[in-house]
Amino acid sequence: MHDQPASKAPRRRHPLFWVPSLYLAMGIPNATVSIVSAIMYKNLGYSNETIALYTSQMYLPWVLKPVWAPFLEPYLSKRSWVLTMEFLMAAALGLVAFSLPLSGFFRLSLAFFWITGFASATQDIAADAVFMTTLHPKEQAKYAGVQGMCWNAGSVLTSGLLVTLTGRLHDGMHYGWVTAWMAIIGFIAVSLALCGVWHLRVLPPGEPSHLKGRGLKSAFLSLEETWVSFFRKDQIWMMLLVVFMYRFGEGFIERFGQLFLMDSRAVGGLGLSNTAIGNLYGSLGTIGFIAGALLGGFFAARMTLRRSFVWLAIALNVPHLTYYYLSVAMPHSLAVIGTVVTLEKFAFGFGSVGHMLYMMQQIAPGNFKMSHYAFATGVMAATKWGTGTISGFVYDAVSRSYPHFFLVVVLLSIPPIVLAKFAPFPQPDSASEPAPTTGH
Image 1 (cartoon, rainbow, N blue to C red):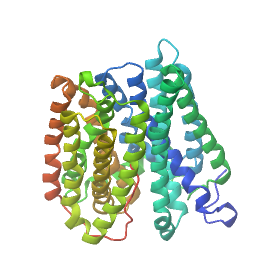
Image 2: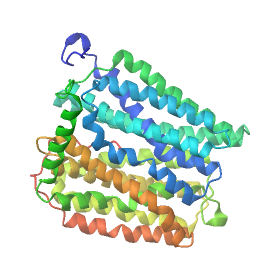
Image 3: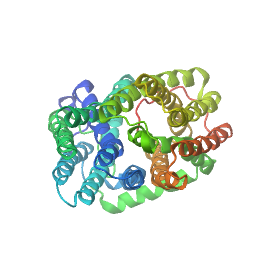
Image 4: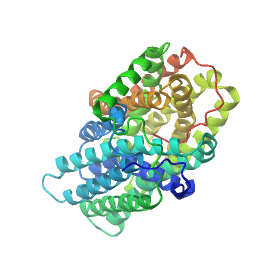
């Protein structure tokens, strides 16, 4: 049975019924897989190198999602894919929680986190498609801010408030780390299940795909046509190099920043508790990111992307010096540490606008705008995956010295600025696209 078009009045609900919950349900599993899992494994006694290597691989689904996106369309509606993935993520995270007391929990939990990652990346494809095919362009612009804030709210809730709660369960109520994390991961699983139940009632179907019911062959043909047209774009390889390198240094910060804050001072870390990490890295850091993204959007709109791009790249990369400062000065004051971390995240938010707008305005335009934007974000995700994978080896190569590690990160942040200076702009400047404020 085919879903009716989203334009039918009986199937249409006000966007505020489903846009906030949809993007909240996208932010929660992304943060759980990419951030919370690393903190959990650190609490359970694993080394930085092991955590960096294995948790970085779990970001691979976001790298590969453009490959399987066309294969979703011939079989289920966009709404059905969202619902299926939300219930699958709830089940997978529930199994993560149940696996923690078992002797082979590390491999089991990694496997279930992998399932969560693939389901989350698939949900992203379908949910963005529901948003873009249900709402008219003016409505999309109207709810873009809600979309971004709710995605980041999912990240704040998960990597901030819930990580803080694990610290209170362990330090304040004296539960073991296994019990504390079982409770929190279980809570996340239940939250996603409740989102699925809510979306059963309110989520629109989205526009039916032109591939619906046409089978696997049509998906392969669509994928081939999309890829061929993508690599025929003018100066595409240089643009992809710019996209890949833009956040290269930031990839190391994302993977090792929280581990540095958690490590004991005896090994060069700052020795912060889960409660402090949740407040600083999750809550305050995300608020700084959102504020930076909003101001970065205004800055780019006022100057145009072409004129502001280098400055946005500088804003994102130069503040990596903050972590080098922390590793050398090793301040004890939470106020100082919090200010420095929030400053870095503010700069990241400010500069990341240039990254997203460059993909949206210079790479995506054409007959396959949605797919080509997904390809570009896949390259962006490849940076996060690649830098996370090698970060543990870099840390080991510099004798596990945090000052040396963050100095390497600062040096690796120079090439992105140079590339931004020479970035090609084959498309005219556009002020028609709203600056995204999501972190994905």
